[in-house]
Image (cartoon, rainbow, N blue to C red; front, side):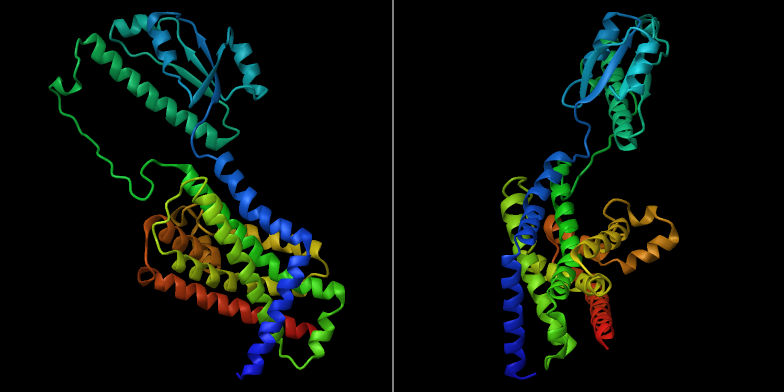
Length: 380
């Protein structure tokens, strides 16, 4: 490669960036994805139970039942009141007005005073299985705490340590996210999803725009190889996406959600650049089968969903069927998520991450040259 080769790459990359800056729709979309989209995901999506609407059927109306109901506190539960019959409770569940109904039996306090076992029925709307599971888990923990308080109160024991019975104490040490904040997980996850979508769509959009303007044929007959034509487009997409990532990290993830960045920022940007390079090959493939931006966007989403589902972000690798676990090795996002979270939250260095990074680069090289081959085949 001589200096003229680099001059051509620089000129073509500058051209792509200028064209992007004049495309108001694409400019607004990229700005929206890296700011508002990440903010909405971080503030509006939570893995915790928050103000779950519940009602109570208290058939006992005793001191014990009122104490039990008082455990249903905000911000976890939002007790809307009493249901006076099973028919009313069923109607509220059917209409989706409440997430669950607590049914306290008529002899609740009497059974407790007699030191006999009693039960409270929880009727849950599990159409949203995540909320249903959270409500069931939270109520189970709350009920266990009430049981302990009741036994200590009526056994006249003030300090649980004074009970001379064998106890097993579980001491937890939670690393990397000790408070279990979903606002540390969701913004990073959404940023990675945005990077994946734009890495697919931006290179495709840049090439498809050339098709729509009729300039792609002019480039194909110029004294330029397919690599010289496409490489500047990938460089332009890299610059745009990395700029968006910088705005997202400093303006949203760090400033708004206070997510600690424990690793090297330079290492994360380097890994992100490799990931964009890996996915951009699929973007070039998308451009070869799309005639306009609408088609490119649809094909991008069609490829995005399998990559997300096979990334391990939502379902652990071990929970997947065996054949899907092998398919995860074909998803660049699975490597990027492992490396990205390790750098941001764990402070991992590249000497620990070199193997998945090398695998990501190798997969990206295969995809990139596949995209160039498809582009060259289109005009041969």
